[in-house]
Length: 405
Image (cartoon, rainbow, N blue to C red; front, side, top):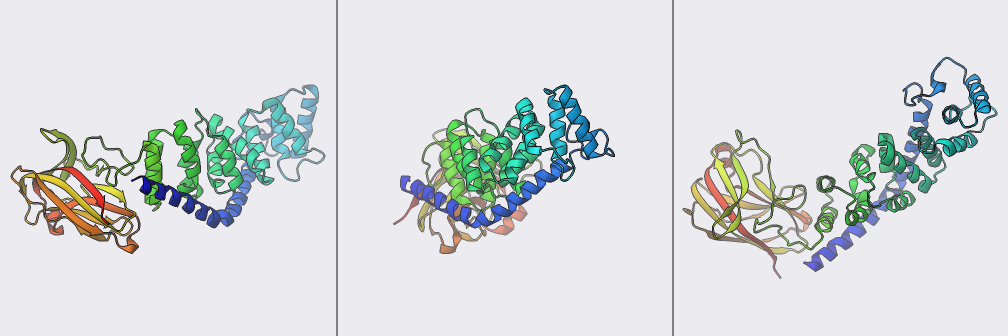
């Protein structure tokens, strides 16, 4: 098991490096788009009314040079007027409308007086992006996300995850109590960046409890949905903090953990469900998985678990007990390639046992083209019986999955 986790960790690092090289070219394009987006944001600040209490936005028809002169006169009378400095910095960020006034000098002064103002921080971030000063860019964007919950700043940070210098700078901001990473990860789909590129940040944040459980579960779901199975499993084991068996929670003693590599029960309204799965405690067996079949059609997967299998041959075994199970061909646990749904193997038909526990076992091989992720799921042995509906009850316990030589 330790060897499996070591292999998975190495593959995680190797896969990340390859993806980093592939996306390096796209990073240049994304950074350029981010810069344009920030510049356009500043240029349209007045039109979109994004800058509150901004005198420069009061009169859209006024001549910009006259507004600049008015603000300079105001500043001459009160050099500590931070709002005037901020307004002047916004105006001087507009191209060709501020002759004789240096934007950088004005922005630096506005920063000295009101460095915590989100308008100033946005302009500083825009300037750093234009100059490709990635550590400074990250510093300002993190402040915006952390202190002002700035959505565009989060999207821009997400787009910069593929820039090595920016990623390194972000890692220095992973600290206990910081809460900027969660909104950045949430908008990665919006930024068009696969969540796998955030893994270095996630791995550093986990020991510091920098990600709440719901965010970790969302990450796991995204990674699995994008086919990043090795990265997802590495995150799963890092989150749990200990090595895991090939088949997780096979004795059904623990409550199910959503989003990862535990048992997944499909959420179906009771009034429409063809099968209802839950954990119960039975005498002499403690925790078991119990499935109640209602006679309605089974339209979704009843229960499943994703497995990470890095060897070619395995043996799956377990125990089952059924009561008043009305099904012609029985039930089965099916093993399928997670990527394409191709069935690898299934257990022998599990039929009514009159409330007696029975063993089952199946040997199988993972095809070369299957990939490392395999889905284990409960279904009817014959597909037509899922449509017709099944009645009765089935319980399962003591699942084991072992690699064969």
